[in-house]
Image (cartoon, rainbow, N blue to C red; front, side):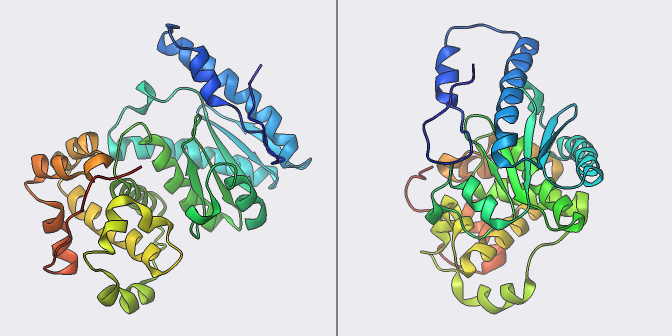
Length: 295
């Protein structure tokens, strides 16, 4: 039986820590791990579906469960889109996630921000969740959720969050993680979610040696002011520059670590400091991270 955490929320939250503890010392092959986690994930979806509402249905494919109350035609289209995107993202980032991620990935699609916020509150304190159109929740059993408005909105969000999912086993700094997700979103769906008028309005005055610390720590991506969109834009631009040299970028992606904001990997594979990387976009300044990063 799948253990659940005690909660006042109407949504069941499995106690994944208890599951992991129960498996200490248990040896399984990759095939056995896939079956084990898939069975647990399926049990979870069966509990979650009625908690979301009677109109919700579960759609299962090779790599995903999609749980939604949207019309069947829409859901089946999105499941097919997810499978096609899965292959494309793996090709772009060139990581074998199958060696590290077992079981199928749940995709929760809800009809409104109220349901979205209520579900996210299970995992993320309200003060840490800035405005967002979707989120990958890497807690115990990684899954993602977003509110549905239309297919033009849903497809790029799905690409973005799936990219987060497929690199979730890597200890990436937030700026690399968000940069990769945005590049995948742009390349695969053709979407560009950046508001360039806001970038033009704020980028000249916002960044200082103090505010750049939020970029390196990852806090910038959850800010409630212009710092959020500026962090996303900066992450995409510097990651795009690095990704243009694929022969260097892919080893960098495998080696970059959040604990030093990717400094050692950037130096090893590109011969750059973090401050030099940022100076190409923000001009000369003291852009280096200060102190150890905290997750």
